[in-house]
Amino acid sequence: MNKRITAGLLGYLTLFTGAAMIPSFLLAAFAEETGGAAAFLLSIFLCVAVTFELERFGGLKGKDNIGVRDGIAITGLGWLLVSILGTVPYLAGGYLNLIDSLTESFAGFSGTGATVFEDVEVLPRSILLWRSVSNWIGGLGIVVIFMAILSQFGRGAMFILRAETTGPTKDRQMPRIRDNAKALFKIYVVLTLICAFSYFLCGLNIFAAINHAMTTIATGGYGIYNGTVGEYGNAYLEYCMAFFMIVSSGSFAMYATASRRGIGVIFRNTEFKVYLQIISVVSLIIALDLFFEMDFSIENSIRGAIFHVASLSSTTGFVAYDFDTYPPISKAFLMMTMFLGGCAGSTAGGLKVARIILLFKFVGLIVRQKLHPQLINTVKLNGQVINEEVVYGVAKFFFAIVVCDIIFAFVMMFDGINFVNAISVSVSTMASVGPGFGIEGATSTYALLPNLSKLAACFFMFISRLEIFTVLVLFTPGFWNNPKGW
Image (cartoon, rainbow, N blue to C red; front, side, top):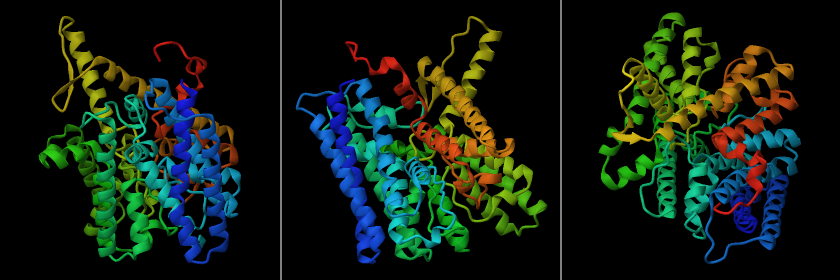
């Protein structure tokens, strides 16, 4: 790993973090939130100071290229550094203690959207905006947005994009990596603006529309009311949100390709079609369950099912009704959708539908080979042959995420949380959902978790956002050596 290059780019990332705090600072200043303005000003100065120190140690030169290890280090350490700096507004403003500030910041940037605030309605608008901004930056990816804005990346920039992009495959739509990042960022911004305008038409004020649009497209789920969407009691808003949560669960690379080749790209995408089929079937089952078991009206059953399936499958975590009171069958299907998540290359968390498709095809291939040992078969996705390394990588990731779920659950049980609650929190945290069942129910917060569990949640939110291996490799002693060829 080239420490000079890594430090230089981390310096730019911290400066970018400080710049992202400026809108919240300006809002606090204009709204005469004296404490909030001071907290954000201190945070910005701290980001600048860290940038200055990192730039003294490192920096990029004209012919520098980023290697595999550099890309992993910049992505992993960059996320860690930005999440830590993101705690300063909460801590300096006196809104949260250190552990709670860390939890709120990691939940924001990871897109989990969980909160330790028991009453967000008493918070100043500047803090509410910062929570939404952190969700939005983390949704597409801190480094992807950074790459789209900054041009100082060599040919090795693909290693950074690969380290941060979610899913089993890393699609490229354009030859240049920076052009790919810019295309993704443009789609991200355009969808956010359309979403905000749609929410405004549904009756939200400008501040609420912007905040909810950022956290919808980022599938983070931060709201400005304790009951999130349920506070509005607006059916049009719920259908509109469900639509944009589903859109955000699709691959942004797919949308970038569709913008150049036509909308047919979307309808030919196997993963997105399977995702739509899953949420359609699950929504129908839950709607019938709500209608017959809870005596909901037909419209309320359909709306409640579609909204919450979209919310949890996209791992956004918005709540229109306390789904923790739903019948057992509905809750089981909702938990399944949050574990599966959205599509690869989307802002959604979870296992990803592409991996589910590949796992089923892989199992089918093994069964056929048992019956016909001489059979040579391949696994395909979207008409393309997926090489064996990717397929085995999917199996490894599935194993890793299940093991992490179990470890996190055991940590919480050691910390005094019962088995059912520990499993629920673990699944929803690793899937980057936020709300879950039990202690972390639809209307509950991470404030109920003991301190050890909160710190563990920070770590597991961090590794799940970067899909585990990008972070775990940082803990291997061999990573920090510099053998030739890396």
